[in-house]
Image (cartoon, rainbow, N blue to C red; front, side, top):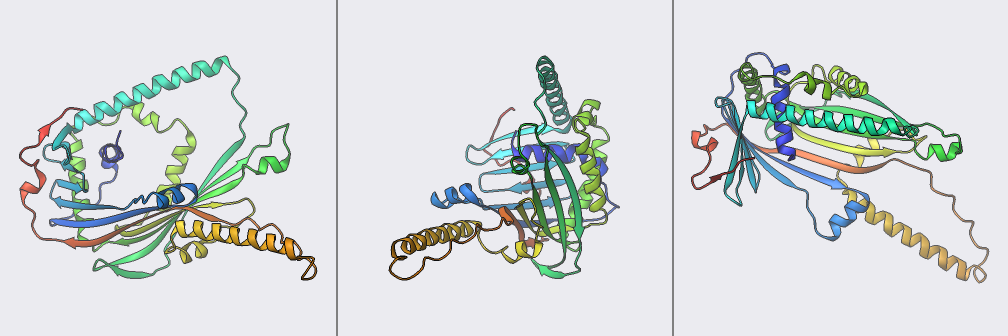
Length: 359
Protein backbone atom coordinates (compact mmCIF):
# COMPACT_ATOMS: atom_id res chain seq x y z
CA UNK A 1 0.00 0.00 0.00
CA UNK A 2 1.39 3.43 -0.90
CA UNK A 3 1.90 6.02 1.83
CA UNK A 4 -0.56 8.35 0.10
CA UNK A 5 -3.26 5.67 -0.13
CA UNK A 6 -2.76 4.79 3.55
CA UNK A 7 -3.01 8.45 4.56
CA UNK A 8 -6.25 8.93 2.66
CA UNK A 9 -7.70 5.70 4.02
CA UNK A 10 -6.99 6.77 7.61
CA UNK A 11 -8.60 10.14 6.85
CA UNK A 12 -11.72 8.40 5.56
CA UNK A 13 -12.03 6.13 8.59
CA UNK A 14 -11.45 8.83 11.21
CA UNK A 15 -13.02 11.95 9.73
CA UNK A 16 -16.34 11.46 11.50
CA UNK A 17 -14.62 12.12 14.82
CA UNK A 18 -12.86 15.29 13.67
CA UNK A 19 -15.76 17.55 12.71
CA UNK A 20 -15.24 21.24 13.64
CA UNK A 21 -17.87 23.98 13.96
CA UNK A 22 -19.60 25.12 10.77
CA UNK A 23 -17.41 27.30 8.56
CA UNK A 24 -17.51 28.81 5.08
CA UNK A 25 -14.34 28.59 2.98
CA UNK A 26 -13.13 30.01 -0.31
CA UNK A 27 -11.12 28.30 -3.03
CA UNK A 28 -7.46 27.95 -2.12
CA UNK A 29 -4.24 26.64 -3.67
CA UNK A 30 -0.92 26.49 -1.84
CA UNK A 31 2.53 24.95 -2.18
CA UNK A 32 4.31 22.92 0.48
CA UNK A 33 7.99 21.98 0.35
CA UNK A 34 9.18 19.05 2.49
CA UNK A 35 12.69 17.80 3.03
CA UNK A 36 14.13 14.96 5.07
CA UNK A 37 17.68 14.79 6.40
CA UNK A 38 19.32 11.70 7.79
CA UNK A 39 22.39 11.19 9.93
CA UNK A 40 24.74 8.25 10.21
CA UNK A 41 25.32 5.73 7.42
CA UNK A 42 22.12 6.65 5.57
CA UNK A 43 23.08 10.31 5.51
CA UNK A 44 26.55 9.50 4.17
CA UNK A 45 25.09 7.23 1.51
CA UNK A 46 22.65 9.88 0.29
CA UNK A 47 25.37 12.53 0.17
CA UNK A 48 27.75 10.19 -1.68
CA UNK A 49 25.23 9.32 -4.38
CA UNK A 50 23.61 12.73 -4.60
CA UNK A 51 20.26 11.59 -3.27
CA UNK A 52 17.63 14.18 -2.46
CA UNK A 53 14.55 13.80 -0.30
CA UNK A 54 12.94 17.15 -1.14
CA UNK A 55 9.32 16.98 -2.26
CA UNK A 56 7.17 19.85 -3.54
CA UNK A 57 3.41 19.36 -3.25
CA UNK A 58 0.63 21.64 -4.51
CA UNK A 59 -2.72 21.43 -2.73
CA UNK A 60 -5.93 22.71 -4.35
CA UNK A 61 -9.27 22.91 -2.51
CA UNK A 62 -12.65 23.89 -3.92
CA UNK A 63 -15.71 23.06 -1.83
CA UNK A 64 -15.87 19.28 -1.56
CA UNK A 65 -12.98 18.71 -3.96
CA UNK A 66 -9.34 18.36 -2.92
CA UNK A 67 -6.35 17.70 -5.16
CA UNK A 68 -2.66 17.26 -4.32
CA UNK A 69 0.03 17.26 -7.01
CA UNK A 70 3.68 16.24 -7.05
CA UNK A 71 5.95 15.99 -10.09
CA UNK A 72 4.93 12.42 -10.91
CA UNK A 73 1.40 11.90 -9.62
CA UNK A 74 -1.78 13.48 -8.32
CA UNK A 75 -4.51 12.49 -5.89
CA UNK A 76 -8.09 13.79 -5.96
CA UNK A 77 -10.90 13.49 -3.43
CA UNK A 78 -14.45 14.13 -4.58
CA UNK A 79 -16.86 14.27 -1.65
CA UNK A 80 -19.85 14.67 -3.98
CA UNK A 81 -19.01 11.43 -5.80
CA UNK A 82 -17.67 9.86 -2.59
CA UNK A 83 -14.52 8.71 -4.35
CA UNK A 84 -10.72 8.93 -4.51
CA UNK A 85 -8.78 9.12 -7.76
CA UNK A 86 -5.03 8.53 -8.23
CA UNK A 87 -3.24 9.70 -11.39
CA UNK A 88 0.18 8.65 -12.69
CA UNK A 89 1.39 11.34 -15.07
CA UNK A 90 4.30 9.34 -16.46
CA UNK A 91 2.07 6.51 -17.72
CA UNK A 92 -1.00 8.75 -18.15
CA UNK A 93 -3.20 6.36 -16.19
CA UNK A 94 -5.64 6.75 -13.30
CA UNK A 95 -7.51 4.62 -10.76
CA UNK A 96 -10.72 5.45 -8.89
CA UNK A 97 -12.09 3.95 -5.67
CA UNK A 98 -15.34 4.82 -3.90
CA UNK A 99 -15.53 5.30 -0.14
CA UNK A 100 -17.53 2.08 0.20
CA UNK A 101 -14.85 0.16 -1.72
CA UNK A 102 -12.15 1.70 0.46
CA UNK A 103 -13.90 0.58 3.65
CA UNK A 104 -14.46 -2.90 2.18
CA UNK A 105 -10.78 -3.14 1.29
CA UNK A 106 -9.75 -1.95 4.76
CA UNK A 107 -11.96 -4.57 6.43
CA UNK A 108 -10.48 -7.26 4.19
CA UNK A 109 -7.00 -6.19 5.26
CA UNK A 110 -8.03 -6.45 8.91
CA UNK A 111 -9.37 -9.97 8.36
CA UNK A 112 -6.11 -10.99 6.72
CA UNK A 113 -4.22 -9.47 9.64
CA UNK A 114 -6.39 -11.39 12.09
CA UNK A 115 -5.74 -14.67 10.26
CA UNK A 116 -1.99 -14.00 10.31
CA UNK A 117 -2.04 -13.19 14.02
CA UNK A 118 -4.07 -16.33 14.79
CA UNK A 119 -1.55 -18.43 12.85
CA UNK A 120 1.34 -16.76 14.62
CA UNK A 121 -0.22 -17.34 18.05
CA UNK A 122 -0.81 -20.98 17.16
CA UNK A 123 2.86 -21.43 16.27
CA UNK A 124 3.99 -19.58 19.38
CA UNK A 125 1.84 -21.83 21.56
CA UNK A 126 4.02 -24.75 20.56
CA UNK A 127 7.19 -22.99 21.67
CA UNK A 128 7.93 -21.03 24.83
CA UNK A 129 7.82 -17.29 24.13
CA UNK A 130 11.22 -15.53 24.07
CA UNK A 131 12.05 -13.57 27.21
CA UNK A 132 11.29 -9.86 27.23
CA UNK A 133 14.52 -7.90 27.19
CA UNK A 134 13.10 -4.37 27.18
CA UNK A 135 9.89 -2.50 27.92
CA UNK A 136 8.87 0.91 26.67
CA UNK A 137 7.30 3.94 28.31
CA UNK A 138 5.86 6.73 26.16
CA UNK A 139 5.41 10.29 27.40
CA UNK A 140 3.79 13.24 25.58
CA UNK A 141 4.09 16.95 26.28
CA UNK A 142 3.26 20.25 24.60
CA UNK A 143 4.66 23.75 25.04
CA UNK A 144 3.36 27.08 23.74
CA UNK A 145 6.06 29.73 24.36
CA UNK A 146 3.82 32.47 22.92
CA UNK A 147 6.18 33.32 20.05
CA UNK A 148 4.58 34.40 16.76
CA UNK A 149 5.80 35.24 13.26
CA UNK A 150 4.49 35.57 9.71
CA UNK A 151 4.95 32.65 7.33
CA UNK A 152 3.83 32.92 3.68
CA UNK A 153 2.11 36.15 4.72
CA UNK A 154 0.03 34.68 7.57
CA UNK A 155 0.55 34.96 11.31
CA UNK A 156 1.47 31.70 13.02
CA UNK A 157 2.11 30.65 16.62
CA UNK A 158 5.01 28.45 17.72
CA UNK A 159 4.01 25.19 19.42
CA UNK A 160 6.23 22.32 20.53
CA UNK A 161 4.97 18.74 20.62
CA UNK A 162 7.33 16.22 22.21
CA UNK A 163 7.11 12.44 22.40
CA UNK A 164 9.61 10.54 24.58
CA UNK A 165 9.94 6.80 23.97
CA UNK A 166 12.02 5.39 26.81
CA UNK A 167 13.54 1.93 26.52
CA UNK A 168 13.88 0.30 29.96
CA UNK A 169 15.97 -2.89 29.87
CA UNK A 170 14.83 -6.06 31.62
CA UNK A 171 17.95 -7.69 33.01
CA UNK A 172 18.37 -11.35 32.12
CA UNK A 173 19.74 -13.95 34.59
CA UNK A 174 22.89 -14.52 32.53
CA UNK A 175 23.94 -10.89 31.95
CA UNK A 176 25.50 -8.05 33.89
CA UNK A 177 23.83 -4.73 34.62
CA UNK A 178 26.18 -3.07 32.14
CA UNK A 179 25.13 -5.48 29.40
CA UNK A 180 21.45 -4.85 30.16
CA UNK A 181 21.95 -1.08 30.14
CA UNK A 182 23.29 -1.31 26.60
CA UNK A 183 19.63 -1.62 25.58
CA UNK A 184 18.56 1.47 27.55
CA UNK A 185 18.01 4.95 26.24
CA UNK A 186 15.32 7.30 24.99
CA UNK A 187 14.17 8.27 21.52
CA UNK A 188 12.77 11.80 21.52
CA UNK A 189 10.58 13.06 18.68
CA UNK A 190 10.44 16.86 18.95
CA UNK A 191 8.13 18.72 16.56
CA UNK A 192 8.28 22.49 16.27
CA UNK A 193 5.00 23.61 14.69
CA UNK A 194 3.97 27.06 13.51
CA UNK A 195 0.16 26.98 13.55
CA UNK A 196 -2.05 29.52 11.81
CA UNK A 197 -5.83 29.93 12.12
CA UNK A 198 -5.94 32.78 9.55
CA UNK A 199 -4.45 30.67 6.74
CA UNK A 200 -7.19 30.10 4.09
CA UNK A 201 -6.29 26.42 3.79
CA UNK A 202 -7.27 25.92 7.43
CA UNK A 203 -10.86 27.14 6.88
CA UNK A 204 -11.11 25.12 3.66
CA UNK A 205 -10.11 21.92 5.43
CA UNK A 206 -12.55 22.62 8.27
CA UNK A 207 -15.38 22.98 5.77
CA UNK A 208 -14.36 19.73 4.10
CA UNK A 209 -14.35 17.93 7.45
CA UNK A 210 -18.07 18.71 7.80
CA UNK A 211 -18.65 17.39 4.28
CA UNK A 212 -16.67 14.25 5.16
CA UNK A 213 -19.03 13.56 8.06
CA UNK A 214 -22.09 14.00 5.84
CA UNK A 215 -20.61 11.80 3.11
CA UNK A 216 -19.74 9.08 5.59
CA UNK A 217 -23.30 9.06 6.89
CA UNK A 218 -24.34 6.77 4.02
CA UNK A 219 -21.16 4.69 4.05
CA UNK A 220 -20.72 1.74 6.38
CA UNK A 221 -18.14 2.74 8.96
CA UNK A 222 -15.22 0.76 10.31
CA UNK A 223 -16.14 -2.74 11.41
CA UNK A 224 -15.70 -4.09 14.91
CA UNK A 225 -12.63 -5.94 13.67
CA UNK A 226 -11.17 -2.67 12.39
CA UNK A 227 -11.58 -1.05 15.79
CA UNK A 228 -10.02 -4.07 17.47
CA UNK A 229 -7.09 -3.89 15.07
CA UNK A 230 -6.00 -0.64 16.73
CA UNK A 231 -6.39 -2.11 20.20
CA UNK A 232 -4.23 -5.24 20.01
CA UNK A 233 -1.85 -3.57 22.43
CA UNK A 234 -3.52 -1.52 25.23
CA UNK A 235 -0.46 0.76 25.25
CA UNK A 236 -1.39 2.00 21.76
CA UNK A 237 -4.81 3.10 22.96
CA UNK A 238 -3.27 4.68 26.06
CA UNK A 239 -0.73 6.54 23.95
CA UNK A 240 -3.40 7.88 21.59
CA UNK A 241 -5.48 9.08 24.52
CA UNK A 242 -2.48 10.89 26.02
CA UNK A 243 -1.68 12.47 22.69
CA UNK A 244 -5.28 13.66 22.26
CA UNK A 245 -5.21 15.15 25.77
CA UNK A 246 -1.94 16.99 25.16
CA UNK A 247 -3.03 18.41 21.80
CA UNK A 248 -6.47 19.52 22.99
CA UNK A 249 -6.96 23.17 22.15
CA UNK A 250 -4.29 23.29 19.45
CA UNK A 251 -5.91 24.79 16.37
CA UNK A 252 -4.61 25.91 13.01
CA UNK A 253 -2.73 24.70 9.95
CA UNK A 254 1.00 24.01 10.33
CA UNK A 255 2.61 26.51 7.93
CA UNK A 256 6.03 25.30 9.02
CA UNK A 257 7.04 22.19 10.92
CA UNK A 258 10.42 20.81 11.87
CA UNK A 259 10.51 17.35 13.41
CA UNK A 260 13.72 16.16 15.04
CA UNK A 261 14.29 12.52 15.96
CA UNK A 262 16.92 12.47 18.70
CA UNK A 263 18.67 9.53 20.34
CA UNK A 264 19.37 10.17 24.04
CA UNK A 265 21.71 7.73 25.84
CA UNK A 266 21.08 6.40 29.33
CA UNK A 267 21.91 8.98 31.99
CA UNK A 268 21.74 11.95 29.61
CA UNK A 269 19.03 14.61 29.93
CA UNK A 270 17.42 15.73 26.68
CA UNK A 271 18.51 19.27 25.73
CA UNK A 272 15.91 20.97 23.53
CA UNK A 273 17.92 24.17 23.19
CA UNK A 274 20.85 22.25 21.72
CA UNK A 275 18.57 20.61 19.14
CA UNK A 276 17.06 23.93 18.06
CA UNK A 277 20.46 25.62 17.96
CA UNK A 278 21.66 23.14 15.32
CA UNK A 279 18.36 23.00 13.42
CA UNK A 280 19.85 24.72 10.36
CA UNK A 281 22.99 22.61 10.34
CA UNK A 282 22.86 19.69 7.93
CA UNK A 283 23.06 16.28 9.54
CA UNK A 284 25.42 15.13 6.79
CA UNK A 285 27.72 17.99 7.81
CA UNK A 286 27.68 16.67 11.36
CA UNK A 287 28.81 13.31 10.06
CA UNK A 288 31.59 14.89 7.99
CA UNK A 289 32.76 16.98 10.96
CA UNK A 290 32.83 13.91 13.19
CA UNK A 291 34.86 11.96 10.63
CA UNK A 292 37.32 14.83 10.21
CA UNK A 293 37.78 15.19 13.96
CA UNK A 294 38.35 11.46 14.33
CA UNK A 295 40.97 11.52 11.58
CA UNK A 296 42.61 14.55 13.15
CA UNK A 297 42.74 12.91 16.58
CA UNK A 298 44.16 9.71 15.09
CA UNK A 299 46.88 11.63 13.24
CA UNK A 300 47.75 13.68 16.32
CA UNK A 301 48.06 10.53 18.39
CA UNK A 302 50.35 8.92 15.82
CA UNK A 303 52.64 11.94 15.65
CA UNK A 304 52.74 12.14 19.43
CA UNK A 305 53.71 8.47 19.64
CA UNK A 306 56.56 8.85 17.14
CA UNK A 307 58.02 12.07 18.54
CA UNK A 308 57.25 11.56 22.21
CA UNK A 309 60.88 10.67 23.01
CA UNK A 310 62.22 13.66 21.14
CA UNK A 311 60.01 16.51 22.27
CA UNK A 312 59.42 15.70 25.88
CA UNK A 313 57.01 13.62 27.88
CA UNK A 314 54.15 12.03 25.99
CA UNK A 315 50.80 13.63 26.73
CA UNK A 316 48.29 11.74 28.78
CA UNK A 317 45.72 9.89 26.70
CA UNK A 318 42.43 11.80 26.69
CA UNK A 319 39.51 10.28 28.52
CA UNK A 320 36.76 8.62 26.53
CA UNK A 321 34.13 11.18 25.49
CA UNK A 322 30.98 11.23 27.57
CA UNK A 323 27.84 10.01 25.81
CA UNK A 324 25.61 12.76 24.45
CA UNK A 325 22.39 13.08 22.51
CA UNK A 326 22.45 13.00 18.73
CA UNK A 327 19.91 13.94 16.06
CA UNK A 328 19.50 10.99 13.70
CA UNK A 329 16.74 12.37 11.46
CA UNK A 330 15.12 15.73 10.73
CA UNK A 331 12.02 16.46 8.64
CA UNK A 332 11.16 19.99 7.51
CA UNK A 333 7.92 21.13 5.89
CA UNK A 334 6.92 24.68 4.98
CA UNK A 335 4.13 26.41 3.05
CA UNK A 336 5.82 28.71 0.55
CA UNK A 337 2.88 30.44 -1.18
CA UNK A 338 -0.90 30.62 -1.18
CA UNK A 339 -3.56 31.84 -3.63
CA UNK A 340 -7.29 32.34 -3.06
CA UNK A 341 -8.22 32.91 -6.71
CA UNK A 342 -11.22 30.93 -7.99
CA UNK A 343 -10.33 27.46 -9.26
CA UNK A 344 -11.92 25.99 -12.40
CA UNK A 345 -13.89 22.74 -12.07
CA UNK A 346 -11.57 21.21 -14.69
CA UNK A 347 -8.76 21.24 -12.10
CA UNK A 348 -10.53 18.38 -10.33
CA UNK A 349 -11.10 16.14 -13.36
CA UNK A 350 -8.91 13.54 -15.07
CA UNK A 351 -7.19 15.00 -18.16
CA UNK A 352 -8.18 13.76 -21.60
CA UNK A 353 -6.04 10.93 -22.90
CA UNK A 354 -5.57 9.19 -19.54
CA UNK A 355 -6.41 5.47 -19.36
CA UNK A 356 -8.29 3.97 -16.41
CA UNK A 357 -6.72 1.08 -14.51
CA UNK A 358 -8.15 -1.19 -11.81
CA UNK A 359 -6.60 -1.93 -8.43
